[in-house]
Length: 308
Picture 1 (cartoon, one colour):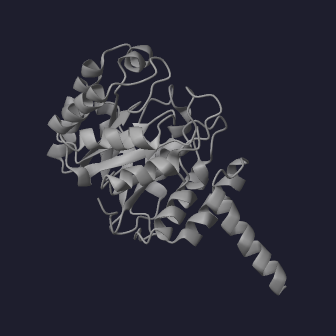
Picture 2 (cartoon, one colour):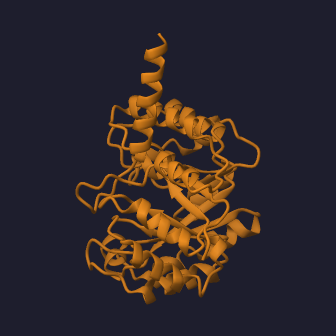
Picture 3 (cartoon, one colour):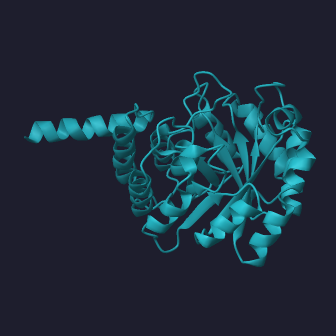
């Protein structure tokens, strides 16, 4: 299969990337980050999470963040909603898309939410119905699709089963997530071959973590299977509490560098994303995990010094 001519990058840094930060990130910083990403041309941004602050205190200011951002026309601002209460918050905040989630690993589901995969997804039925009744997009995210910290390998049939359940809920898009970053390229291709048999290829996305340094290889493998939507996190923000040493989500800058090098259109200004990555890394006092971002920033600084 030939590579797609264009892809959509879903920016998950403001939500998935920041949610595990131990020190609370000021609301104004979150708003500034989202505004910078929107200005760079990213047309789908995970902006907030409407979950109990008891469980995810970093996301307690979701309503304030959504109220403070400068919305760019044509951009989808997505929020995570685990239940009807969360959905009500998302609706009040004028979210464009809600995100629901379920694991492809029975062990992960039992250990984390004490119920089966089927039971966990059944809980989202009223949420999906409420969103659809109000014209909101619904995205389903399949976690541990390519490996589990508890059971190891995850059967392809289990992933296909979760995709089918999300499809039955009416999800507009479904994410296939390598939550702990253990996938390899051929494994990725095989999984996408299977799930494209039960859900439209153009509405599937790849969400890869870079724990073993394989995220870009897996994204390329997914491209070869015709996948046109990928998740990424500016400056590689994030991490997985179940994978020691994980570097988090693949960096948006690295994904953009790959896509542009392949001649694939993204509609995103890489230089602006590099600047946004440096901004948030400095703001929260953590190293920038984007290799392309750091290299491009160093090149720009070197050129500026030469002209001084």
